[in-house]
Length: 288
Image (cartoon, rainbow, N blue to C red; front, side):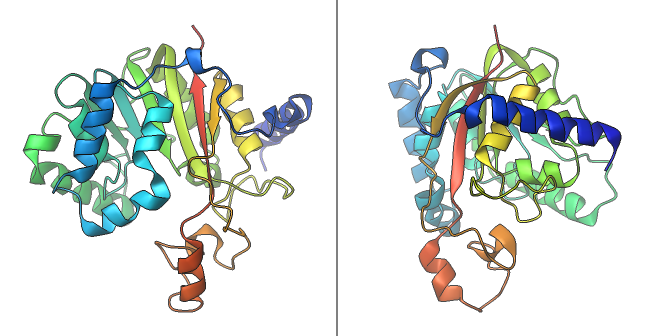
């Protein structure tokens, strides 16, 4: 491990110790410190979720991802400039965010580096581009930018977006020792007072955090300390995406559960009954 990595790990551990793990109650810390979703935006979210552009498979995941509850917790408004980090080839949240923001706001997809020589990256970039092209009435105003460590770290201008959203990405950045750099890039992109909304697979509190998150699970207190280290203020916590059935002790990590089922048919009925992973949902603010 590099010297800088050791220093970072030590600083995170110290922050966890001094901060008492930021408290264990998953409630809003300061409801007045974040924007509030208005009725028009809530109605637009409902319309997007009910739209015929969403596949049956994507709709089936609403019960685990709670998109309306999650986005309203973050304080989404239809007049915001919102940057979603790594929407993937399928653009699950793009199907909701792009239509909601189309008329009054702006949706930016901060995706992978188009210069990457990774076949996985190139295949997913093409799939995402094809998705946007398939429904110009919904996605025609969406903007695609690049945000991937280490070569593409400035997807937009500094202080230019109202909200940054990331769904189950932190473990990927940790595996590449890129979490700090990615969070720093998000911090720069946000306007002062802007919101970072984060959802991630939640590790058990009593388990030491693997700095590379090989299981896909991240301790909530560790994630909070990382974001605070980048300059963010924690202003809200929610259990809207919690799943107490998730035991987090699977042979293939979080990917053992649906929708991946990395073990194939082995124990599939058991994993289906558990559902998707237990997740924390955090709201941060860039200080004014």
